[in-house]
Image (cartoon, rainbow, N blue to C red; front, side, top):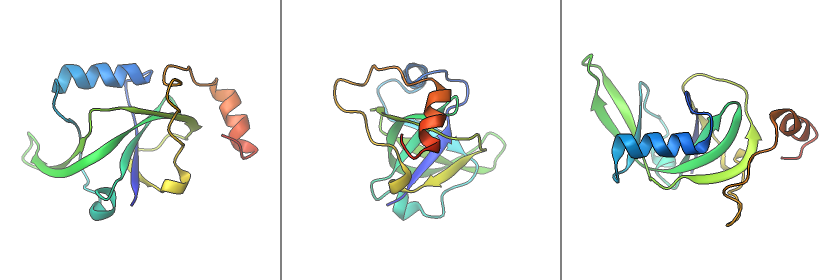
Length: 137
């Protein structure tokens, strides 16, 4: 099993992603359409999630349900990463900016937040970076 990681561009916090997906997809599954399809599709579909980075910090994930080919308006095939609508909040994990999506090993992924902690605000980025530097998350 392998995960994906992606910047959540335009969203300040997890609620922004949840609200945008609700407005765009209603009650159905959410999608993220990307130019490149994962070559390790079987591993992603074997229980992988898409981890979302908000302003330099991983804060949430969504289970990947499918990888579907869709045709872009320009006639070029794209990959729709079909996501479970349930957004699972994770421990905060600082990440540097990158483009597109990347593979994300399970051992590098942050743990899910325990029930009842979903509404906690993450630590300031400076503190997260310091904790990450000394090997703590």
